[in-house]
Image 1 (cartoon, rainbow, N blue to C red):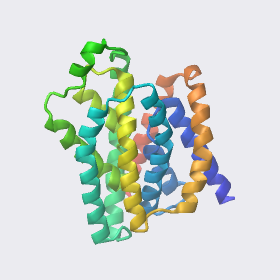
Image 2: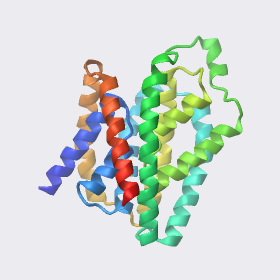
Image 3: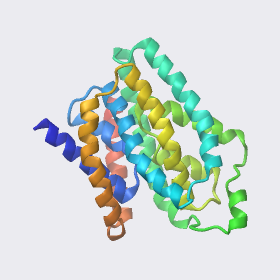
Image 4: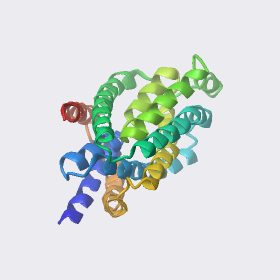
Length: 263
């Protein structure tokens, strides 16, 4: 019975990702903790690899469509990957099942969910006015940040946050990119965010696996549901009122974040 429930949960999260683009970590991790009673360190570690595999296919599709600016991805990864490895080292030294570490994970996860709720609402407002296309000769300027160090520094913050909570590579990553590259077309912002999330969540997920924080059988069940869910969601996206769904998701994420902080 539990196996079917995990597959259904994976399908539901995959469907929502396909419909809205909201990252799986902000949905799957609290779902595993609250609904299924999975320990926070196992939920986070398993969800990181879940996110890596689910976004890998999206990255291939975006790369074929030439919608990814690899300079932006490289700048973000230059900060996020080292920060992820450093966070993993600290977790290994302290022990992921340590009660103090578990408390830090749940509190930080709650704060990350609140940030994701805000970022999701921001995307509803700013995303409507963001340019959809930019002339070819303006793309290079649009892909240049106001300061070269900012993508690396903010990438480091995202890397530590994602490794500790599995949340942040999606909506928060898009928010950061929209602030750093305001002239960049929204599809290219999303493309850079998804492409950056794949190596980050893969490194963080494998790091969690090395310290025993991944449930491989649970991961397989979630993926068995999420892959068809994403396929269906992507096909239904044009027929669904995105603003309504994202607004409801923001409320749900804010509620889950507040509940985690209160634990």
